[in-house]
Length: 319
Ligand code: ADP
Ligand code: MG
Image (cartoon, rainbow, N blue to C red):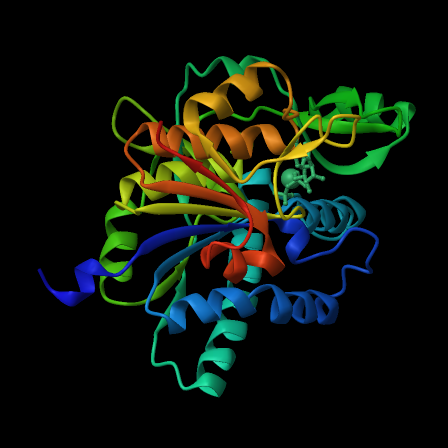
């Protein structure tokens, strides 16, 4: 076997908050500063020879894009969510590529980087299609929300007592459309940035044509599907906590180190991981390992290298 086949092939999913921090200004300069810090650990893994495919969230960024489109409707045409997700994949992907290239140059790493606008196939009959649950875009007053519902046909719901927001379906990812290309690129040694924001969801029509659906795919589930499809051995999910806990933030809180997938499933069923945050990460990690993945890591972006060195993080393993 060639040496290149023996190196670790990993999909690393970066939370959208690792790029635009909550409470920050969300400016491009700030995003670059955050990326400069967030991508440091990934560069270290690349330096060690890891083959990395990087995916990322887009919540704050696509939210800002929706505000821009909303506020300029009198002067520039509306954009569907699918095009906004693709735009943000390109914009963030470019910023990540540039940041990585500059870090590689400084550290003498000879690796190519590219960003791929990614489509993800979802099922037309996915039950999520008729049950929109995923909040997107800015907060509105109830009056604004109901007005948009009537004028645009949006689904709108109250969000945790803080206001009203648009909700869209979040169907299950079935397959990454560009999976074969991504695998070729990864095998060539390139760092690939793909499936940003979970990818643009599309359905395959009876005649084979792809059409966009008005929804968003969970980026952790899309990363899991991508990892399985390109034969990654590990799936790393980077977010705002160093370790996952049961009884998180409550009496009896216990942080987890190494968890057999059967035990993680039990905690998930017991309700330790909320649907809107840790739930999909644990689900993605479990499915990856259940489908034959070697192991999956959940940790903070800043503790990535320590976790890989066995010092921290929550690892979901077979068993
Ligand atoms: P992303 O980084 O992909 O945007 P989220 O912020 O949506 O991820 O979800 C991760 C967050 O979920 C963590 O930063 C933490 O605040 C919260 N969380 C919820 N339940 C748990 C748990 N059981 N253990 C650890 N963190 C949890
Ligand atoms: Mg999130």
